Length: 320
Ligand SMILES: Cc1cc2nc3c(=O)[nH]c(=O)nc-3n(C[C@H](O)[C@H](O)[C@H](O)COP(=O)(O)OP(=O)(O)OC[C@H]3O[C@@H](n4cnc5c(N)ncnc54)[C@H](O)[C@@H]3O)c2cc1C
Image 1 (cartoon, rainbow, N blue to C red):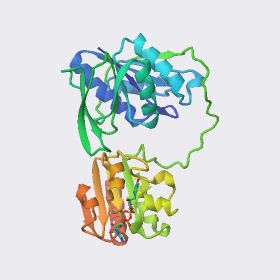
Image 2 (image 1 turned 135 degrees about the vertical axis):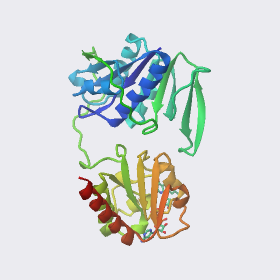
Image 3 (image 1 turned 180 degrees about the vertical axis):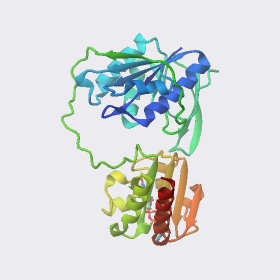
Image 4 (image 1 turned 60 degrees about the vertical axis):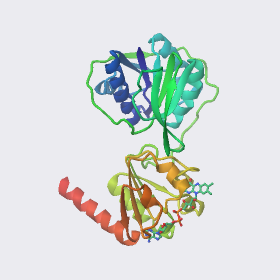
């Protein structure tokens, strides 16, 4: 059995998801007496994957591979999958990896399971537990094809350090020219994005207006968190649509989601169900969000949040 992971980078640095994929792959490989190979594109620190159990790292360094292109990336990954005699490919649940997953499933004639939250069992093909129905239910799925693709749900396995010796191969692929060329990328801001954040602080209509968003931003800053909001908040133009979380907005799989003045409508919860710990601050003890919360404070955001910020600042200054 051979396992290949696609380790995604941003500006050459590995995303945290890549180390999680490596940790996950290492455990499967250890159980099966196999090894882990990683493919990455223009990584500046490929050797760091060896801290998470990757035995061989293939770093593709063609200049044309700097920006994501589904056709070229999938060609390189499928070629590597074959040359490394792999039969399991592991991807993250980022938008680019999900895009690649469908294309690679065709190229590799592989079964593909997304939103996977468990290690596979090998009783009947490859049996995997996955989230479904916007994380409201689990299902077990058996991949019966010879090749399999696992799309691992973010933060479902965590990071586990396993230092191994790695071979690093710098590789140049013969690639066709891309159908589309990215000419420039403009990021909205330098703040942590919702997709990559470990902690998300989110505000709803209970904040009364955009003039009060300093509460959300100050709390996010002290926690090193991304900011988010409910749909009406972005519809009203209080916040940009890029921050809208939920069924019709962005999904959040953070370790901590703090919802302030958000009622917890089903469409909002659909986007946050896979976050690990949910904290709710709301004046209404019957707000539906409390049923989904791990911790709740029944209280006025304008009273609770400044106190919370002050406590966190005090805690940080005494622990630094
Ligand atoms: C097809 C469809 C798709 C949708 N998709 C989404 C989606 O993707 N994401 C999404 O968010 N919504 C979505 N919605 C809208 C959703 O149904 C809710 O209307 C919306 O989530 C409510 O936003 P809210 O909680 O900010 O506002 P409200 O429902 O107005 O709730 C405000 C909350 O703030 C509390 N509050 C008031 N004052 C304070 C205070 N001082 N301190 C603390 N708490 C206070 C209130 O008790 C209340 O619970 C969708 C709706 C439809 C029909």
